[in-house]
Amino acid sequence: MTTLTLQPDATDGIDTYVYEASANANFGTGVTLSLIGYAALRQRVLIKFDLSSIPAGATIDSATLTLYGQGSGADNTPLAVHRILAASGSWTEAGATWNFQDGVARWAGDAASDGGTDAGCTQSGTDFSATTMASGNFDNAAGVGTDYVLDVTEFALMVTANYGLLVRNTTGVASATQPASSDNATAAQRPKLVVEYTATASAPREVRTYAEGSLRWAEASGTGGWT
Image (cartoon, rainbow, N blue to C red; front, side, top):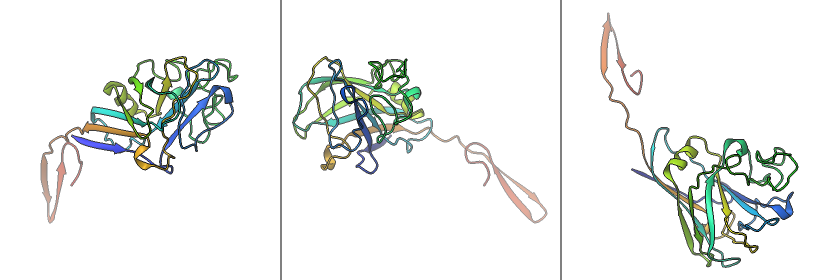
């Protein structure tokens, strides 16, 4: 089993949030993320980790997202984590707003393409998977991490087609919960993902040697092709 730990900095990290009350604003460079569940003030967090080092066909044994409190905003707020679906998968850190995924494309769930109440990556089954990957109350104390143990079946689907994670506040509370972002000055408090996986074993190879005059070559069956 292999353990992969990802906790990217401002250069490599991809995370932001969208805000219903500031529908055209982008927050991709902020040092904190922000989550509100109150109608007309909703905020949704978007995070994407680079999962390209996980081999194709690997078995996901476990995956845990950790978010770190900053000591400001609402404490003990229930959050839920989902994988973002392909239809809303073009979002970017620098372009995502309540109205748009990337500054150009509308969110898939925005039926009228007008930045209404169904924008902002809010629509279950359209913008994000209806299956909850993890849920739990967030500890907002400064420097304290809250672990969200992700459903391995959903996570494996995300490894195959990685469009990132949506984190949402599941209550109607109007005050914000604010975990650190990848732009945070404290490296140990940036969003972290720890994945344990088992790579698929290579098929055994049978080697046959052929000769013709002074030339000899070998053909390997199974993974690896020719040697």
